[in-house]
Every structure is written in C-alpha cells, then in structure tokens.
Image (tube, rainbow, N blue to C red; front, side, top):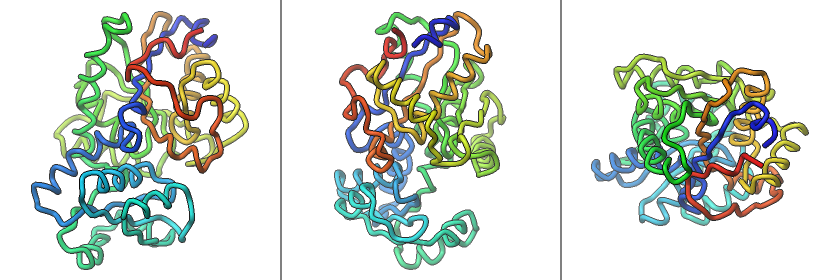
Length: 308
C-alpha cells in the first residue's frame, strides 16, 4: 500500500480469520478457557449475550453444535431476522430478546439471577467472551505469531495493532507481552462505552498494572456506524491486497492505522503486526461483500498483503 511505502512502515497480518470457517478469528481464543471451565463444572450448557449480528454468539453456537453442548443467547433489542440469527437458530441456540433497556442491565450485579433460575447449571459467559478467562485465552496469540515470524523473513516486530470491541483480546496481548511490545487498540466503540472499565477489571483480577497499551478512537461516529470513506477504503484494500475485511472492526482498525501512519506517528522502519480478528460472517448484513468475499488461503501470518 502506498501510504505504508511512503512512511517506510512494514505491516504483517496475523490471519486469524483463516483458523476456522465458523469459530473464526479471535473468538475461539476468547472462548476456550470459558468452555474448559464449563466442562470442569459439568455445566448443562453455556449462556451468553450479544447482538443480532454478534460474532461471539455465532462462534459459541457453532461450537455448541460441533462439540455437542447446549447454548442460550440473550440478545440486544427486539427480534430481528438476520443471517447471524438464522445461523444461531439452525445450530440449536435458544434465543431470548431482551429489548434495549433490558440489555443495558447486563452490568448489574443481579442480572444473571433470573437466567440462572431458568437455566440451572448453565455456565454464563460475559458479552464477547470477555473477562480474565477470555484474555488468558488470547495470550496464546503472542507465541503463535512469534513462531511464524521466520516464515515471512522477520526476526521481530515492534508493536501490535488490532480492533477493540470489549478489550479482551488487547488485554490478553498486554498480559502476554508484559511490557515488551506496545499494543495499539483501535476502539470500534466510542470512549466511555465500557472498554476502559473492562480493561481495568481484567488487569486488576490478573494482578497486573493497567499499562502497556494505547487505545485510539476509531468508531467513526459510533459502534457499527459506516460511512462512504470507510467503505471506499475497505474496497480499495480488498482489491489491492486480497485480504477480506468487514467494516465494523477490521476495516475501522486498518483505516485508523492508515490515519495514524499518515499523520507521522509511526517511525520509519517500524514493523507492526496487525491482528485480523475475523468477524467476516457479519459482512452478510453490511452488504460489503466486495472484492474477494471468501478470503484467500494461506498461512495465518502473512507479510506481503499490505505492500504493492
């Protein structure tokens, strides 16, 4: 990409979107410790939360179908018919629509009480697979990436760059790095919508300092808000790189990176690792199936996609 070449910045992409066609991206890493805990507790199933296009619920329902455990989804808003919701239903997830006011109560201490009574012995997973267990699952990404650096001709890199929804994946990378590399998080939700609180809670539970990362505003007016500049950028990247993106998370994160680089904030010679966190199933609803909707096969870590 010209803006990287002009700045003398190299970017490699950790292609988590290629790990699994359904339990894709960072979702498995966030889920695995929760699912192990549910199994250890002999839980009757797993219950969690999300929206009508939730990548997290989509991965959880797929995992339940594949591995044979019951799933329940508590959804934001009123009933909607979306491609994601149809998949959840097809895979046997029991759905409950909470409305918007009801969904906002999810942070209250007594939120889970009625659901625990209705689904006794179901293991509750926080929104997005969050919390310390989710972050600990994402710590494995550091080792995964470092094991593949030689395959792209790198011996090291300087910092991480990724989209942030709940902050769980960012927290896992910060814990794994323990101060060695900075982790940049391009927030897909506006400031004050919970990411900062989630991060503080995770680091407090882990007994670690709330440092080693930098959050950047990348929501472009609000969560799931899409504008013409963003869609044009996503299309340009897909045509030039054959890396499939979606506009809500990875598209906004990469656009935030471009703005950051063009503003002169990244030193020449810097090597950044961009984490493709998946979420491509959500493209079906945003109508951004442009360029190469199925992605391209290859190693999860690729260095040449953002260079011409």
